[in-house]
Image (tube, rainbow, N blue to C red; front, side, top):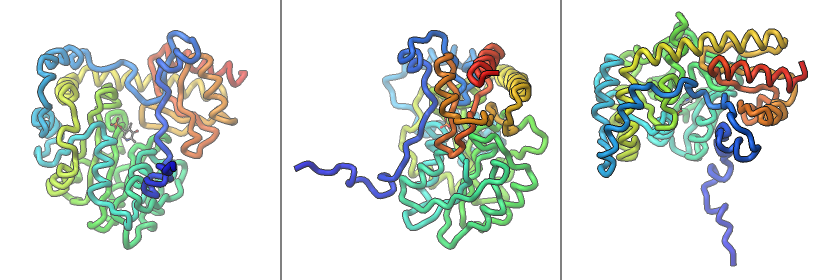
Length: 368
Ligand SMILES: *Cc1c(COP(=O)(O)O)cnc(C)c1O
C-alpha cells in the first residue's frame, strides 16, 4: 500500500506555493551553454561585498570547528551602536526572511489572521500559510500599499500586519506622515512589521521614514533590516529585527540557537565599518536607475517609480515570454507572473555595462 505523503502535510502547507527565486547565473550558463550571463533578478549589490569584509572573512576560517556565538554579541553591539538602541532590542536572523518567519511563528496561530497588501513581498503569504493562519490581502493602490484599506481590514483575530517599505517587487513606498499615522491608528495588541530591506537606497529620499526611530513610541512595532541588499552579503544570510526588548525576548525564544553562522556574524561587522563601499554602491545604483529609466522612456514603456535598487517595468505583453527571450540573450530578470503582474518584469539596477546590455537586449526582444 502506498501512503499519500502529500496528505500528511497540514492544509496550509498543501496549498503553499513555494518561493520562486531568481535563476542562478550558473544554471542559465549550464542549461543554455551561455558564457558571461548577467543576473539582474534578485536585487543584489552589483559591486559585490565590501573588500574589507572579504578580507576579514579569512581570519575566521581557523575557528570554523566551533559553534557560532549564539547571541551574536559582537554584531549586535555594532548594530546597537549604529541605531542608537540597546542590544536587547535586536533579534538576528538567517537573512531577514528568517526574522519574518520567527515573528509569524511567535505571534500567530491557525485561528488568527495576518494582513498584507496585494503585490507585497512573497514571503508574507508563505509564512502566514505555513502556520495555517488566514491571510487577508488588501487591494493595492497605484501598485503600493493602501494603508486605509489595510486598516479597514483589521478583524478581531488579526495579530500581525506586514508592510514592506519600500515594497518588493513594485518599489513603491510610504512617506513618513502616512506611516506614522497608520502606526498610531493600529491597536497596540496587533504587531506591525515594517520591512526595510532597501532602507539604505530608500533613505536617500527626504520623506522616506526611518521607522526604527519610532520604536519607543510604538511597542507593537518591529522593524526588519538586512545585509543582503546594499551591504552586498545576500549569500551569507544575515538580517535582523529591531523591536521593544519584550518582543525581542520572545523572538529570541523561537529563533534557532545558532541561526546565523559564524562567517556571517563576523563579516557583517566588517561590512558595517565600510561606509565608503556603501556610498559607492548607492551612487552606482542612483546613476544606473537613471540609465534604465531613460531607456524605458525611449522605448515608451511605463515603469513603476521605485526607491529601491530595482525597477518594475510594463513590457506590454507576456512578461514571462519576454523573460524567456532575454534568457537566450544571457540576461536574467524577474518575471512577475507569481505576483499576478503578468506584463511586468522586475529588473535590478546593475553596473553601467550590465544595464546597457540589458536595455539593448530588451530593445532587440521587443523589436525596437
Ligand atoms: C530582499 C528582501 C528581503 C531580505 O531578504 P533576506 O532574507 O534578508 O535576504 C526582505 N524583505 C524584502 C521586501 C526583500 O525584498
